[in-house]
Length: 210
Ligand SMILES: Cc1cc2nc3c(=O)[nH]c(=O)nc-3n(C[C@H](O)[C@H](O)[C@H](O)COP(=O)(O)O)c2cc1C
Image 1 (cartoon, rainbow, N blue to C red):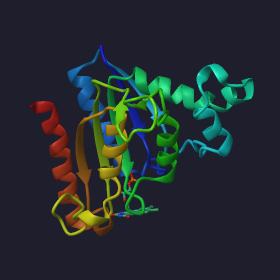
Image 2 (cartoon, helix red, strand yellow):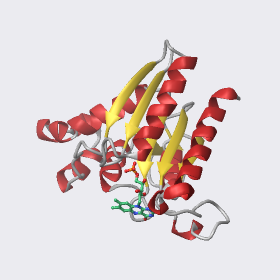
Image 3 (tube, rainbow, N blue to C red):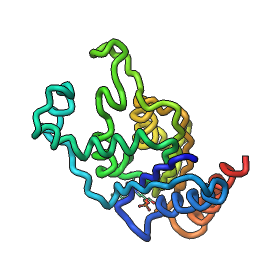
Image 4 (cartoon, rainbow, N blue to C red):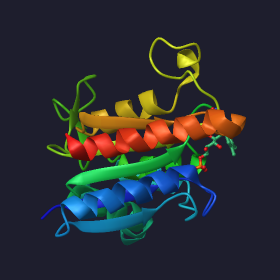
């Protein structure tokens, strides 16, 4: 039995295409592995707070030296980290916003990126060698974008700070096995978008046929 943590990052609800992609993925996953546990982590509509000065001071204080107030400051982050580390599989649904990820999702990532919990340095102190502490996990990233051509070698690739960023930050945490499926062309609508949608649905179906 695996735990699948579903992280939806769109601020949109019913109109969100990335949420529809994660719904489709979950439906197929449950057909294949009905015993697995699906955990939903709402990010896009949850208003996860930005990290603060007090948070930063607390996160870089050795655990045995934390004051009661600092422990409280880290409470949400600790919960998010524990939930994240307990999962075996991650399913992310995210839009591209301003060539990156939505700000609420960035706030969530900041809470997860905890020294000594999700990553460390090889020597235990700054040495430029990051060591991930979240190992042997699988991640799927399902993205929706208005425009097109953001993949490697394509005309907008230099503006893609979304999936390269996610691969970097989760890679530093130790998650190397990452599969991306992208829906593009939403802003063009019509047949162009319908064709993209059909292709993306097929790519999701292929993940379960192979
Ligand atoms: C605030 C905002 C910024 C966006 N920025 C980009 C962008 O930089 N590049 C792009 O291709 N599409 C951009 N889009 C379009 C979204 O990526 C597209 O509508 C996507 O389908 C949204 O995902 P969702 O339907 O899950 O919310 C933007 C949309 C919004 C609302």
